[in-house]
Every structure is written in structure tokens, then in C-alpha cells.
Image (cartoon, rainbow, N blue to C red):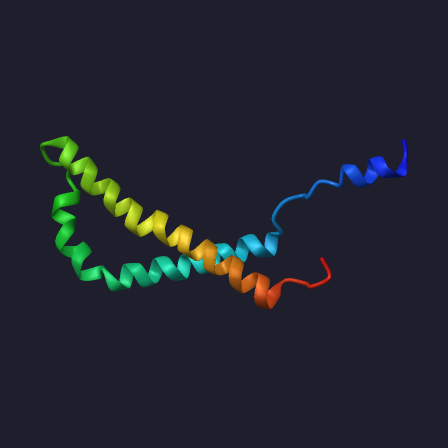
Length: 96
């Protein structure tokens, strides 16, 4: 093989580092805690509507999915985004 062939196909990246993933999990947990604290009273009032499931089931499922999205998915997305920015700026090695 020629030397040019090695430059054409770089060594694959092994994936995210363990420290970055832990930092993402930590930031996601912080964002989820903030959202939970901010909406605590609302969730207490909403609890009778969420459990037990009520009829019509489609309305209950829609409400449950909105709460899952608001309290699990959004903190996960925002926490991961913020964690990546903070990790790249303050923690990551510049030698890579």
C-alpha cells in the first residue's frame, strides 16, 4: 500500500470519551432537576389526571406524552447541548 492510501482512510474514532458522557449525564440531571423544581406545583395538580389513566385513553396518552417530553426529552437535549459546549470550552484537551 502506498502512503497516500493511509491518508485517504484515517483511523476511525472510537467514539465519545467516558468523561464527556458522564459530564452530559450530570448536566442533563441538573437541567431535569431545574425543570422539575420549576414545575413542581403544576405536576402536583396534574397528578390526578395522569394516574390512573382516564377515558378517553387518547387524551390521557397525549397528556402523558407531553409530560414525558417536557420532563425527560427536553432536559436530555438541552443538558447534552450545554454539556458539549462546556466540555469543549473548559475540559477538553486542545491536543486532539
